[in-house]
Image 1 (cartoon, one colour):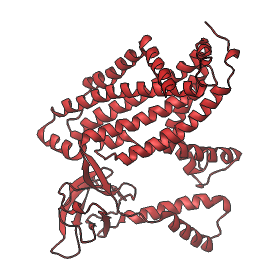
Image 2: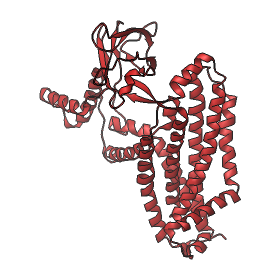
Image 3: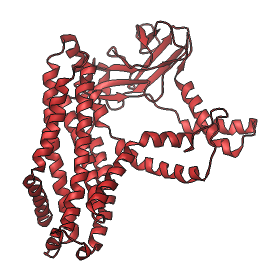
Image 4: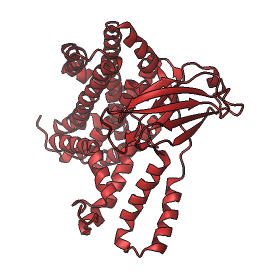
Length: 458
């Protein structure tokens, strides 16, 4: 560790000697501190958070991520090209220690910059929050400046239902093998829609379990968060209904009449003391409108509860971002272990852009074709290109989802809790698993590279 620490210190000294640290710090502070001051929010708590948290942290991730890749590629590739690494490699230090020392130095540098810029964002949040109206500050304290956990009703086994319905359909109709994938996707959408559909005059009941949190029945901060899509758009844009909380008896049930807009999230409090002896709460919705309403099973209904304060939740979000930076540092060093600085930087940034295009790849995988679906027939044309690229995109999406499964920006902007278990899981999946693969590849390439064969410029 002493040798690894020495290389990490040298990486820090190089960053300060070339004033790189101060340049990056100035850029980050200007982006997250000065630019939002020139923009105006809509005066609401959610608009304020959308501007400050989402904008600032997204800019912070982009700037720090690109800087990390550029610095990781440059710190190793330039040392080799300028023949400085040849001098270090002949000393009594293993190459894997040199590689890990540079990675550790970059991660510590990112941690310092992240703490500096993150502290600036937090201070800006507190300052701008004091300028909101009193009622919006109340919304901010109860819905955003808080760490809220989520209780969701148990989801049905969609895959099993799809397969059962698929076998029934094959017995009824002779479906070509080439259309089996399309049929499964259609059945999946039909089953998911049926699970959350509330017809006109109908009622839908959700059951949530408190589990080990039995004291939630006495917590007055519980709130229901819902979103729905109408089958037919009304002229007014709003839809009437009644929410019922508690059991079926008239003495225990609580009712709330509402008029809600479609395709938007709505939150309202849950009356306390309605969990039964088994820690279960029943919440029902009666549709008083003339059109069917669809509550998506993914995010159409959930019960939120207080799980902590905003400060520590914000720190945990920054730690997840630091895990992302650690992976990018390992990726940049792995590229520079074999390639020259321009090629390594191009490869690293290209991989970063590919990961940001996961939405496009997910759409291609969902359609089952790269060339697009024939909308007249609803069929995918299919070709040898699809046979090659679709499995490749599926594997690449699984790798990307290991990183994107943790979204601190969305969680912080909506007041969602980021538990320590998620931070630990992010460290395992992002740093140890994916970063470990990059480190193993980079150390292996760097150890076997002939440094004397590199033509230096010094």
